[in-house]
Length: 319
Image (cartoon, rainbow, N blue to C red; front, side, top):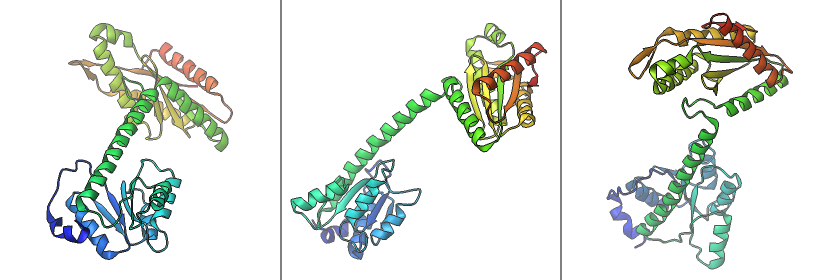
C-alpha cells in the first residue's frame, strides 16, 4: 500500500504508542508533507512541519526540539543529508532519531545516508504500517536512552548529595566552596560561609530515637534552604553540622543570613515520629576576601561556631 492508497484510513485513531515523542517532518512536497502529518497525528505524535531544510534547521535551534526527525533527502537549500551532518556535528543530548526519506534506493545512496548520520533509511513510496513500525523502533531507542540518562543522573546525584537530607554532601560542598573562592578571587568579591551545629543533638537521639533524629536533620536542612537565597549552597558537613556557602556576601550580609537560619530553626518545634521536638542551632559566620584559602575560611568559621556554643548556644558569632 502506497501513501495515496492509505490516505482514506488516516482517520483511524491508533493509540498503542505509549511514549509521546514529538516528530519533525521536513519535506518540500506539500502533498507528501500533509499525508505524513495526518498519519502521525492519528498515531498520537505531536507534529512540527518544515517546508525545507533551512526551516527545519531553524526549528532545531529552539530549546524544545522534536526527538524523532523525518527528513526528506532532496530539498532546496539545505538537503536532508546536510541536516543529518549538522545535527550529529553538534553532539546534542539527548539523542535525536533520524529517518532520512528518499526515492534513492541503491546501495551507495543507503551507505551515504547512514554515514551522514541517519538511523533509518525508508525509501519512497513506503507503506503506512511500515513507517509506523520504523517509528516504533526509534521510540524504543529513545526509551532506552531515557533510562540510561535517568540512571546516570541518579548516580551523579548519589555521588554529590547526602542520602538522608538530599542536600550537598561534604565532598561536594567543599568542591563548590573552592570554586566560589576562586571565582571571588577573579572578580575581587567576597564569599560568606556559615557553619551550623544543631544544639544538643545527641540528646534528641537518646530521648526520641534515631528515626526521630533523622527526621530532625531532614527538617533542619529544609528550613535552612527555605531562608537562604536560591543560589546559596547548603551542604552537610557531617553528623549534625551543616555548611552554607554564600556567594558575594560580605561579613554583614553573612551575619544577617546566619540570624535568619538560626531563627528559622528555633521558630517552631520539629514534628518527628509523633513528637514535637524543640531544636536550636549555633552558627559560626565569616566572610572571605580575595586570596583567602578554603582551609583558612573553614578554620575561621569553625572557631566562630566554637565561640557560639561556648557562649551558651542558640546564637550566631561572626569572625
